[in-house]
Structures are given as C-alpha cells and as structure tokens.
Length: 330
Image (cartoon, rainbow, N blue to C red):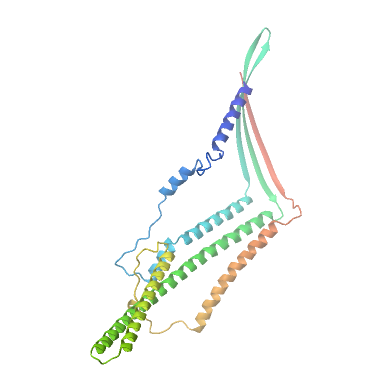
C-alpha cells in the first residue's frame, strides 16, 4: 500500500512539473507564447495610470508645470520604486540580526498485514510528527554588519539618485519652458519683421509703378520679405520643438497642447535678491551634494569588499531542535 501511494505521488509531481515547464515552440513560423503571457497581458490592460489632462483655456506657470512633471513623469516613479526596493533590501539585511524559527508538521499512515496464529491481521499505524528549529547566530566576525552597512549605503545611494532624478526633471522643465518663451518672443519679432518687410516691398512696387524706383530696389525688397518668411518658419519650428521638449519633460505625448504663461504676464523683479556670495554658496551646496553621493558609493564598495574578504571566517551560532512524535496504532 505504501508503494502504491508513493507511485501516485511521484506521477502527480511529474505531471505538475510537465504542466509548469517551458515547452518548445510548436512551429518555426509562429512566435512562442508562454502559459502566463495571457494573464500578464490582461493585468497590463487593467493597469490604469493617471492621465495628464490640461485645461486648454489656462496658462500654466512654471511652478505648476514643475509640479505636474514631478507627479506624472515616469522617471520619478521608476526612481521611487527603486528606492523602495532598496529600502526593503536593507530591511531584509537587518533581519539577519534576529533568530529564525522553522516549524514543520508531518503526518502519515502505514498499513500492513501481520500473520498471527492461523490468519493475517490488518494493522494500521498513524504517525504525526512536529519539528521546531530555532537558529540564532551569536557571533560572525562582522559578516552581518558588513552586509547591513552595504545595504544601508545602497539605500542612501538610491535616495540620492531619487532626489537627483527630481532635480533633472525640474531642470528639463525649466529649460524647455524658457526655450518656449524665447521661441514665442522670437515669433512675435519675426512676424513684426515680416510685416515690415511686406510693407517695404509694397512701397517699392508702388514707387516702381510710378517711375520713382528701379527694378533692383523691388528685387531687394522681395528678397528681404523672403528672408523674413524663412526666419518666421524657422522660429515656428523651434517653437514646436520647445513644445515637444516640454511635453516630454512633463511625461505626456508631444502632441499635447500646452499653454504657458506668456512673457507679458511675467512679473519682472525690480531688484535682485541674490548676490555673488549666495550664488557661490548654491554652487558649493551642489558640489557638496555630488560629493555626498560619491562618498555613499565609496562606502558601499568598502562594505561589499569587507564582506567578501577571503580567509574562511568562522562564526558562532546556536541551533536548537525540538521534535514531538505521536503515533496511534489499531
């Protein structure tokens, strides 16, 4: 009976392994599709991300654009998830300081035939066993501390990288915003220049019709008008590029219509609050931030190198096993 149960269990495990194992493609002209591909695609379709909707009648200021970029740019979310994962890894590394407890319960039934006197008697023996294992490392010559310090340094590095991602997003939004304002101002200037060139061309043609100008004068005016039209189209292209860069920094598609606060609505300060000393202080803080990130990477490398030293370090640990066994016979 025991042999039959073991055979059935072995066949079940082999069938389950065959069902979960990777199979070869059916034909060479079709791509291979895994068993979990449909579930992954369904989960991806059900995943809804917050869409960035702009009010077409509103002019967005620079602080509002920066807030939208920090909330919807995918790079900030990726950096945030990486920082969370590294913080969880730090917690896993710190868990080595605590003891581990493992418990297992085993149960089985054994049936056999016992010959007694002149006939066989069926004998059923039930067995139940509980195993409890306690393991605690008392001293390991700093191995756990090295791994914990390395994980902590990695967590700090990902936090600095997260902040640096926000700084990069803010910088790109500001750069695209001021490029867009510059292109908008150049568009107004180019349209005014084109209007002046067209007026000069019209006046030159009128003078030519009345015999007060020559043909080279008209051709020169036409050349100036064509140059003004070309400059206007170049400025319009630069403005479209600036719109695309701003939309990319905000985490939306380049075709999205975004209205920004025009130059005439920007308040120009009457005085400059910052001076040379404050500018140098800001530059010093920037270099200090960069040096701090480099120092965290160096600390990580030192911790990893200390943790991976050769030499066969040994440790002292405590391991306790408790077993309780109970059987029933009938």
